[in-house]
Image 1 (cartoon, one colour):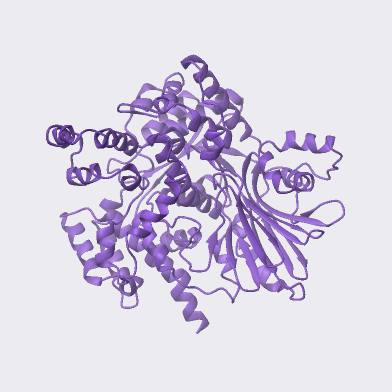
Image 2 (cartoon, rainbow, N blue to C red):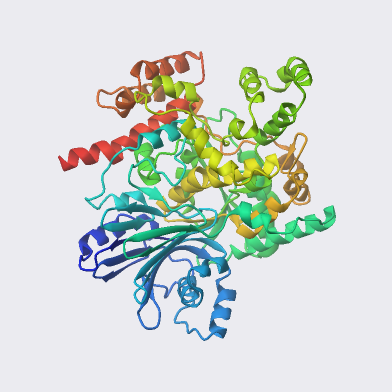
Length: 630
C-alpha cells in the first residue's frame, strides 16, 4: 500500500520542478513510511511512498522494465499476480523481483491498456511509456484506492491525496458550490467531483490515456454491463450456497497473502464476523481481531457481539474504548487526512481503530461492501415495498395508505414515505446516505443559483444504464457507483492510511460483486429479510444472536455528545466571525440547529456534524492557506 503522485507537462521542453515533486511525495509519508522514490525525465515526473507488504527486500518504485523505457508508480495489491506472472513468463517476460508491481508493468507491455482486464485486486497506478510518449493511469473497478487529478492548461497532475496536488502553486484553492450542494445533500461529494473546483477523481473502473495534450478517459468495467453479459445464475439452492461459499473462501484466501502481521476489524456484525469465520478455515495461525466502542455506552457499543466471535474462534482480541473528550484534538487531524469533507460519523471510530491496531498489525481485513452487493440495508426493503404499492391501482393505493402505512413507517416518518409513494423509484431512491433535505438547503444556503435538479440529473444518468434491471439491483447499482467509492471506501482508505495501515475488503472482489449482481433478487431480499444468502451461510458458522441481531453499522453517539460540552464547542466554532458557515449559510439557521438540539426539541446531530466537518475542512484547506499566501 502506497502513495503516488506525478506531473506531466504537455510541452516536452518544460521541465518538471524536482523540489515540488519531492514535496508532493513527502507530504504523504503516512501512506508509505518504509521507502520512497522519484522518476524525473524532463517534462515527466512521478514519485512514490511505500508501505512494504510483499517482497520486502525489493519492489522499490518507481519501477522500470528491462530497457528503462516504461516506468510505473502503483498503489494497491494484485491478488492474482502470481498466476499472471506465470502467464507472462511463458510469453518471454523476465522478472527481477517477486512483487506485483512488476507484474502490472509487464502486463502493460504485453497487453497495453487491456492489461486491466487481467488484474484482480485494488489499485491505482500511472505508467509513463517513453516509446509511445504517453501516460496511462487507471483506478480499480470498485474504487477501493483513490486517484485524484488536476488538469491545467499546460499540465496534468495526479496523486493519491489532494493535499499533494495543492502543493503546486498553480492549483487554485476554490470551493465548488455545486460540490457543496451535493455534500449537504449526501454527506459526501460524489465523483468525479471533489470539493475543489479544479480537482477531480478518476472514477472507479476507468482509465486515462494522455498523448500530447489530449487526455482521454475511458471506462473498462461496469458491474451493470459485466453482469448483463453473464448467463443468469440458475443453480438450485444447494448449488448456489456451495458456489457462494467457494467464492467467499477464494476472496478471503487471496487477501491473506502478506509478509507482515495481519488482522481483522471485528465489529460484531455479520460481515466482519464472517471474515473471521472464513479466515479460520484458511489459516492455522491465531487471528488478531480489533473492535472499537465507547466509554459511555449510550446503547451503541458492540463489544459483546465481537467477544462472542472472538471466543468462538479463539482470536487474539483487542478492544479500544473511546470518548468525546479528545474531540478537539483529533477532529482537525481527521479532516485533514480525509482530503475532502465526508460527514459520515463512522469516520470517528475509523480514525482511532487503525491508529490503535497498527501497533499490532500492518494489514487488516474488514467486511466493507457486503451490504451494497448483498442488500443489507433496511432501506432497500422499504423501497421495494413502496415500489409494489406505487404500481397498485389508485384506489388500492389509498387503502394501503390509510390502513397499513402508518403501522409500517413510525417515528414521524409517515409523511415522508407518503410523499415518496407518489414518485417512481428513480426519483424516490437516491442512495443510503442523506444529510440535509433539499428544501433546507434551498432556504439556508446563501447561494440561490443551485437547485434540486442537480441531484436528479446526477442520479438519472446512473439509472439510465440499468433501467431494465430489477428495482433492487437498480438501487444496489446506484450505491455501488456513488456511496460505496465516495463515502464508505474513501473514508476507509484515508483513515487506515493515516496510520500507515493497509485495509483489504474481500466482499468487494469484482468476481464476487459480479456473482452477487447475477443472483436472483429473492436470494438477497425476501419480505422483511435482508442479505438472505449470507445469513443462511452465517447460521452454519456464527452464533444465532449475531445473525439475528439488529443491524447497527458503525454506530456513533454523536447525538449525546452534541447535547453536552461539544454543543458549545461546535457552536463557537461555526458561529465565529470568520467561519465558513457565515460565508455559505444563513446564520440564524445554524443557531436554531444548536438551540433545538440542546433543548431536545429535535435531533440535529448529523446536520451539525455535517456543517462542523465542512467548517474544519474549510479552515484547513482554504482559510489557513490563503492567509499563508497573503
